[in-house]
Image 1 (cartoon, one colour):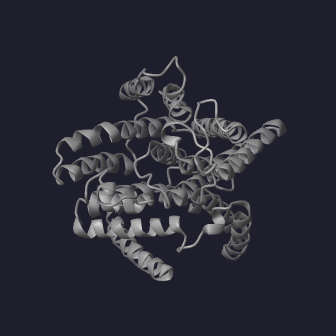
Image 2: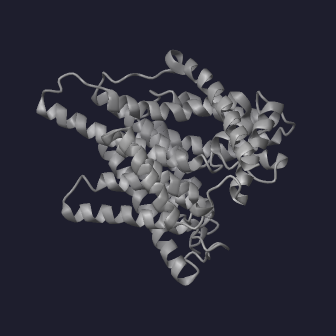
Image 3: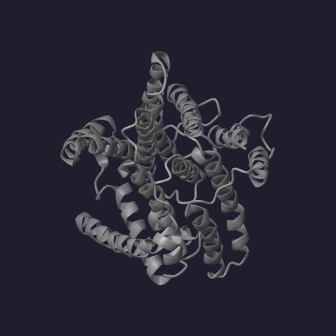
Length: 421
């Protein structure tokens, strides 16, 4: 099961089936996923010991209902076809990442695949076209094939995997340390080549959260201001980071329209995939996109899915196990904390970039979340004192969280629109 889902991860990121003549037209990706799913079905390693295993199938059902109640009953099957494989990949990957060793291997695959895309982008920036045949975007930014055809998606991937590369550099000897640090440097350079403001801000957020954790809020805030100034010098698009700038203004207007879609369809939204039926631009915000397209019901579920992932990692970082005076147990716990911090930083990078992108249903997000869930389930087996999360116990918390975040979006959009006028 684990080798097959890793192969699925490689095919999802590098995507040779979309540009290599040998694989074009062959259902390579779904075939590998079906085989991995088959192994999962007969495996004794299946687990459902996390709320996300319950939330995701219900969220898929809400995606289907959201289009059906808006008059397109055939759209329910379309959503099942689109999101069903993502849900299956989540279940298999989360069950497979049940040990620290497997999580480490999964991180290494994520990083190495991302570095391949960086190398492609470097060649693309030099020659104008990469080995896939994909040229630079019209504004000179690197891009890839398939789901990474948008430079912003590449930046999101690089910002997410950068903390993983740094973590891997701490595990082995000096040569491997240099190799993984080199990968981290390449990922940062790749983020620069995407010239994605959301991705660059995500890198800054990742660094800020790490400094906050290690040195406190004041130091993180001070370095954050310095870092933002440096990013403005590095990126021409960061220099245009202003509510009055055309692209930023378009985003704010899209958020405004998305909130009004929610007001007009508060329960199940306007239907998954229907945002651009009501507005020329997509939402440019993963949270607003889910809110507008699936209403309060879908948003509540999606926010809970995301929120539990963060909560699990924070639980590990705050937990103090018994028997910590034992050197072996203390060392094992420090290893758990380092891995939890790395995954937390990866989530911070992912969702910081996703805040400015409409990537609510993309597979990379759910594969990273699966790695988090698999890690936490395994950590509970190694340290049984860690909290067991269940919807019955804590699911109600996401109702006020959803309502509060929606109110926060209305306030944020109102302020940004007032500043822009």
